[in-house]
Length: 370
Image (cartoon, rainbow, N blue to C red; front, top):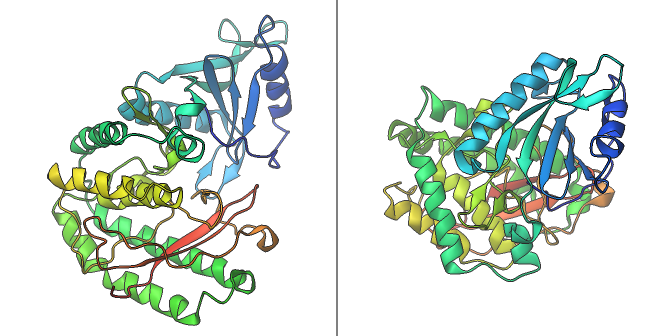
């Protein structure tokens, strides 16, 4: 696995031995090899060697996950491995223990007291990540995207709807919209004149009106566990293609309508200039028997495909605080109309706010007829 965005050195706890662990992984874990590259996220440190990636979870407390104890981090590593093997079995190799040896030094595996766990993965080619193919090229082909669509369809067919999935899904969308609207309200002065008070007033009402449609789809078995964070940087167009980095820390974040999840990826691809990807994947879903939402029922409030007038960005569900207003991108105009199933006849108004440290956005359905 590789991440397409190197990120920045976000503040993180150097206590609880994290600094020592980081120093070991960077300078002493592979003494005969070139220094690895380190990428930091809000929740993890990822160490990239020539052919492997090692993910170390930070001993921090997040809004949706308390990772301060060794047992909690181990459990999340186990869950991450289990979940991601469904879509990237050959990428997620296993867990490896970081141990304190009898002489006090650190080691990867072998005898000693386990002080942490790492997820070991194959390092995927950065140039084959979907976002990089769209940004840098060569552009993905129809066959490559269709192959990815078939991978997702096979995955979706093996998912089962847990009891109450639609209600939990709707409740999550409601909570996330409230957070998004609060963030946007705090940053309104930076958003420009393209946003009116009507949007902020109407969006919660429109979402509430979708409850019946979402519950109907839930009863039809169309709300179940998906990827949970299906973005272009989490898709690698090797053969066969893989989707990685599923959400492991909160089950409800993975409860989705498949057309919702695919539409989110399609919106991001469209913002990167490939408007054909979303309709193709949505059509594949429909042809595979996943009934699309009705055209009259606007369905999505997105926390995954977060679109900006500049580069694509996202708000992690685990990082709900708003980005710094001074680092926001310019506001979006209304997004091009989707011709895919469930989105024809609707306009999706998208506004996102990006910074290098924390990214936040809301994709709000305006509900205007075409």
